Length: 324
Ligand code: ADP
Ligand code: ASP
Ligand code: MG
Image (cartoon, rainbow, N blue to C red):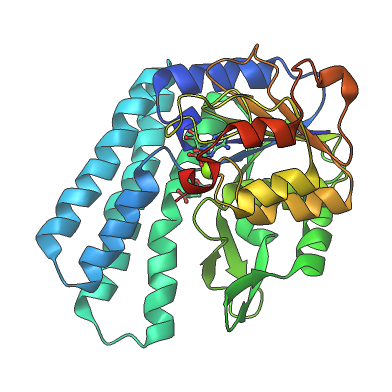
């Protein structure tokens, strides 16, 4: 089996979602699909939580409506069956206009201690994944598994951290030996193992969710589907000279992620490296491009560019200052 993770841009347009459908339908073995929120939705939800904390009701109303409208429109575009689309819209309306509104109300009314307020904020900012996963699972006729049942965290002075052993055991219990060819789960969201409060894996954390699942299930590979042709020598948004790196080791990828290469969230590499599971970075908008393979050793067959990674990086003169 394989684990495929689709990021926000892959899910944020009709083109992206229809490519996601094709990519998943072409799989020839069981897959677990990890989804982020639609692009820009988590930012809106962070703003929403902030507005509610500041008691700005008008701003909350505006943001809630805009989050709802974005999903409303997309559902109309990707779900052909009108009755199904209506049912999914009802569910999204319930999440936005009942659950999220109630969560905002709790922050606006105040009286929560710091921990309670944090829990409510986490509930708000992770709802983007809840909504996108419903939409994608209906679009793909696939089963949805809620990841708070198996991605568990514990608090530390540096913030919530994944309880790795418990999480691995629960993933196995919940997802191994399943009959369904496609299972959808939410990235980013987690749950405190003791209090059962909603927690997060940090911004960009869906990659990490996918890696935890791939490692626990000994997946054949982990595929990170995003909006660029692979892991590149620099952020293509900042450097015109950025080139796709066909082949990297876990160590090289980790180093670049730690230096700010946003294409993979840094904690993602470790769980898959420990199990020696290859990671592919692929482009949802250009699925025929080969992408980048990350593994313990470089595969010489993939090195059809003449430069080594070190040389490519050296050639990117401003490399160090291109990350922010
Ligand atoms: P997703 O929504 O799929 O998780 P992200 O926005 O988190 O996507 O990551 C993809 C983006 O990362 C690209 O659009 C690109 O601008 C940026 N990026 C930064 N550094 C790199 C790099 N070294 N290689 C490829 N993309 C990079
Ligand atoms: N939706 C979350 C974020 O925007 C997680 C992710 O995209 O990986 O940070
Ligand atoms: Mg990302």
